[in-house]
Structures are given as structure tokens and as C-alpha cells.
Amino acid sequence: MIDWMRVNELVDEIGAEDFDEVVELFLMEVDHAIGLLEEGASNPVVVEEQLHFLKGAALNLGFETMAQLCNKGEKAAAARRPDVVSAEEVRQIYASSRAQFERELPKRLAA
Image (cartoon, rainbow, N blue to C red; front, side, top):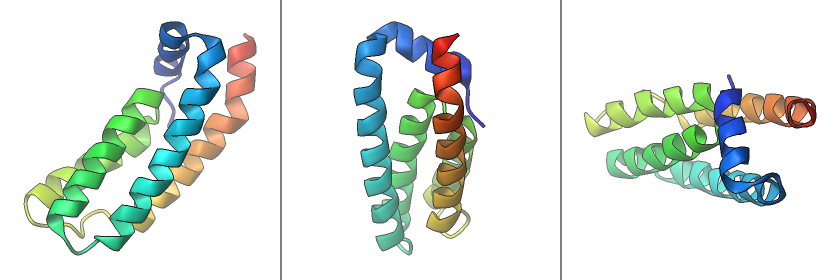
């Protein structure tokens, strides 16, 4: 669900002191984008744009399973099928990924 190698790379790239700020910004932006996805669920352009954004954000922070789901939905929306992946599915995978991330991150950073 989480690509911990990517998380470690990001910590190395930006430094441990700035990592918390990046995570906080990620969480705020993802919550906002999922809201926009819910609002525009019937519009293929909005769905494609928001899923593209969410995919990139997820990949940046190592939320691999979420990125895969967003990629699937983005491609479907580009093919005028915005209902293949719902905002609720994205919200659920985000919530479970976030829970795992928050639960395991302290142990992994301490190692």
C-alpha cells in the first residue's frame, strides 16, 4: 500500500526537518482534491484532472495503491467514463493508506 522506499527517498531529498511540512501539505491538498472530485463526479474533464493530480501527489509521498487506483480512473475518465472509479473509492483507499502511513512512519523514521 505504501512505497516506503519512496518515502525514504523523499526524506533524503528534502530533509527530515521539512518532511512533516510536506506531509501536512499533502494531506490538505488531497482532502481538497477529493472534495473537488466528489463535486465534479459526472464531469469527465474534472474527474480526469483531479485523478491526475491525486495520482501525482500519491506517487510523490509513496501512496502506491492510491496512485494505481487514480491512474485507472484517470484513464477511464479520459475515455469519457468518469464513473469507473468513484470519489468514495478514492476516499476509502486514501483513508486506509493514510492510516498505515501514520501508524508505521514513526517506526520507519526511527530506524
